Image (cartoon, rainbow, N blue to C red):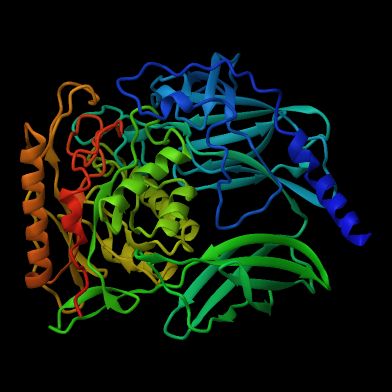
Length: 602
C-alpha cells in the first residue's frame, strides 16, 4: 500500500508540469528565407524543437520546457516597457536568425522584448518554482505580472530566477523579458559576432538563444556539485552544494557502473566526500566510459531531493616522453590530439543549431573522420553539446569568448575599459564553474590571438584558482606570454611547430584553412579560404600533405596537438571540412583516414 501511495504522490507532484506552462501553442510559424539553410530547417516546429532536457549532468524529472512561440517587440533602448507586441518569435533562436521567424538585426540603441503567458496550477508552500535561462545575449531583465524577478549580464552562461513568491496558482501570468545587446558596440565578450559582418566576423545572435525552462524543487534542494576524479588514487571526490539545508541534513550518493550500483557514500553538505573505485574504468576518446550518480539530500531517513548525474575518470596533465620532450598526457600517457577549429555557427540558426540532432551530427562526422579533439572557438555551446562530447569521446579545448578587438581602443574611457575587464572575468569564472564536471573538456583557452587580451599571467592564475585539474592555454596564437601549460602558435596554411620547452607542451592551435567553394551551398557568392582550390582532388591532395607534415612535426619536433581550420564553412569562409549547410562533407571519409595513424608515443 505504501508503494502505491508513493507513486500517487509522485504523480501529484508532477501534475503541475503536465498542465502548466502556457496557453495552447499556436503553431502558425514560418521561418524567414535566409541565404542558406540546413536539412534540419524543415523539421523546426513550435513545441517539437529543442525539447530535450537542458542540464544532463544534474537531472530532475519535474520540469517544463518553455521553448516555442513567444511574442516579441523591438523598441528604443530608452523604453522601459513596450507599448505593444509586434509579432511572434520562435524561442530559442536568436532574433537575427531565419529560424526565429523574425530575422531582424538588433542595434545598440534598441531593446528586444519577449512576452509569454504562463499558468502554474499547483504550488505548495514547501516547494519552489525556478525559472531557468540557459543563455541570453547579453543584458536582460525579467518581470512576472509587472513585478521584477531578476536581471542578468552575460551571453553564454545559464542562470536561474526563483519565482516562487510571485506565482499565483491557477492564474495566467505574463512573463516579460527585455534584452539589450550592443555586440561590438559594447564591452561584453562576443566571440566572432560583429555588428558589421565581414571576413572572419559573422552575424550577431541577440536575445534568448538557448532553452528556457521551469523546474519545481523542494524548499531545501541540491544546487550544484563538483567532481574531482583522481585516477592515481582510484577515487573520485565529490562536493555537493545545497540551498537552505536543514541543520541535520546530509548526503547519500549511489555510484553506478553499467547500470549497477557499486557503492553508496555518505557525507555532510559541502564536505569533500571520497568515493573509492576499485580498478576504475578510465574515460578516453577510444573508450568514453561514464559512471552514473544518484545524489540524495536526506533528512533523517527521508529523501528531500534527488538528482541524477554522471562523470568520467580521466586525467589531463603534462609529462616527458622517452626523449625528454614535454607532452600533453591523457591518463598518464601521450595521446596526440588532432581536431578541427569548431565555431558552432549555423546558416539558419546562427548561434543556435536547428536541433539537438543537428548539433550531434557535427560531432558524429568529426568522429567518423578520425578526429579525437575539437577546439571550441570563442563560443560556449549549450550544455547538451558537452554531454555529447562526453558520451562520444571528443576532447574539447574550450575557448573563452573573446572581447571585440577594439574593446580597449583609444575611443574607450578608463571606466569602460575597467568595466570590460571586470565583466570578462565574471563571465570567464562562470564558464569554468558551469562546465567543471565534463570529462571531455581538457583545456581552457582564455585568449585568442590577442583579441581583448590583457593581464595574461594574472588571468591564467585566475583560471588556475578555479580549476587546477585541467591545462590552461594562455593565448592561442600570436600573443604568447610564457604562462600556462602550452605554447600555442597559428600558421596558415602549412603546419609549423614552436620550439620545444622544458615546462610547457608545444601545440599548433590553428592551421590549414584550405578553401573550396561548393556551388549552391555557400552563404554568398563572394567567399574565401587561406588557400583556394577548384576541385576536390586538388583539395584532398593538399589536405593529406598537411597532415603528413603534422605527423612529422609530432614525431620529430615534439608537437602535442594540431587544430585544423575548420569544421564547416562559415558565412563568407569556405574553408570547412563540410559546407556551411552541412550538405556536403568535402573531405569525405577515406582520405582523412590519415588521422587514424597511431597517435601514441611511449
